[in-house]
Length: 102
Image 1 (tube, helix red, strand yellow):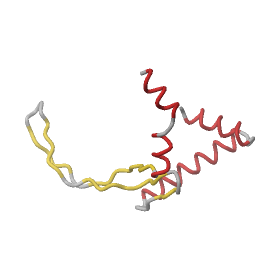
Image 2 (cartoon, rainbow, N blue to C red):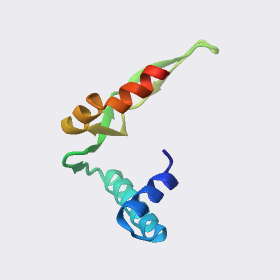
Image 3 (cartoon, rainbow, N blue to C red):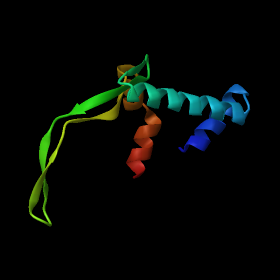
Image 4 (tube, rainbow, N blue to C red):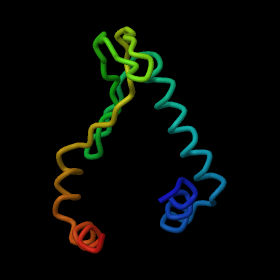
C-alpha cells in the first residue's frame, strides 16, 4: 500500500477530504522525523515505537580493493511493533492466505 492509498483509505473511512488527510499525515511524519532527529523516541500505545538504535563502531571490508575501513558508531531509526500489533498480524487469516499463495 502506498501513501496515496493510505490517504484515500483514511479519507473514505472518516469522510475527511483527501487534502486535509494529506496535511495530517505529512505533519505526523514531520513530527516523527524532527523528534527522532533531536534524539527523542516516539511511543504509540497499541501500535509500536519509533526508536533510535545505536550501532557500535566496527571494521568493514572492501573486498574488491582488499582494504578495511572503520565505520564509527552511529544511530539509525527503527520501528518496533507493539505486542498487540504483532499478535494481530500473527492471527490474521488474510496474511496467512496471501503468504500461502506466494
